[in-house]
Length: 295
Image (cartoon, rainbow, N blue to C red; front, side, top):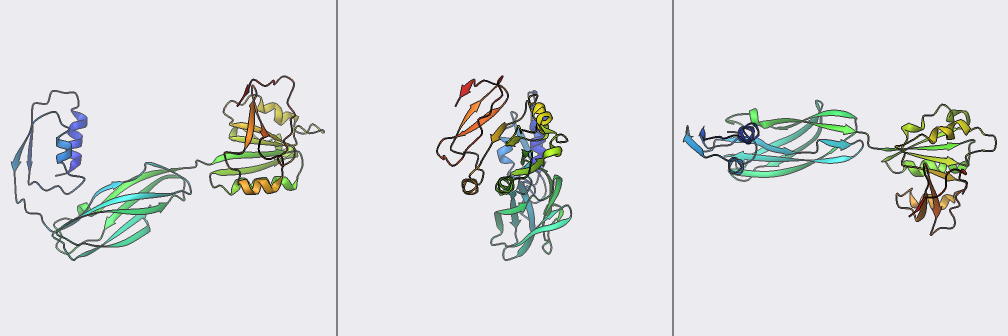
């Protein structure tokens, strides 16, 4: 008997007048959790008919697998595998986890008891974007009643959740290299540098955050690019930066909670230092963008 059978009844016959359920079974569940917990959630009487032999047979099985449906790229996530074994005291089995047919984890399990239950955590690395197929398998014991429950397959979607940061400047500067390196230290951020003529070919809507380093410039190289910013709606913020004390940036690791005061304008956000006078930000604001909120 499988737990999925009772769950299917609960889902397909919800809010319907079910008179009764007749369940013919040997009383042994060989897949999923204990069905007694699901029977209590069904609003109908359950009548059982005993069939076969109720004595547990020699078997090792994967009862359940807990996992996240969605994980982020380059993160480590944990799979919980519930292993059960009957009439197999003193035996050993091997738990193997494969990703798209390639083995990624393996460990040996010692079975101690004729009614053995153990939840095994397995850590897996999400190193590839897209839907990944994972297969959890237990090695077969001699004289098992069935091996169909030794394997379970599931799918996990790996998405790129990194925040994209654009460093825009009219000319190269040593500060830009340090800024990019400091931002890239956090695996959840991806930094790109755009200089001079590259600015006009850059689409600002593809970034979550834009840092304008010494822009607008005296040569008006960035005029076209800055004009594009006024129509953006989904941008987290725009920073105007004139000069940055590099030591402070390296120590802060570009943390999301800088000791800064932010001033919101109609379209943009300007960042001003609070605790560290070493950070000097350009206070250049276009005339038609007057402050509306301080927080």
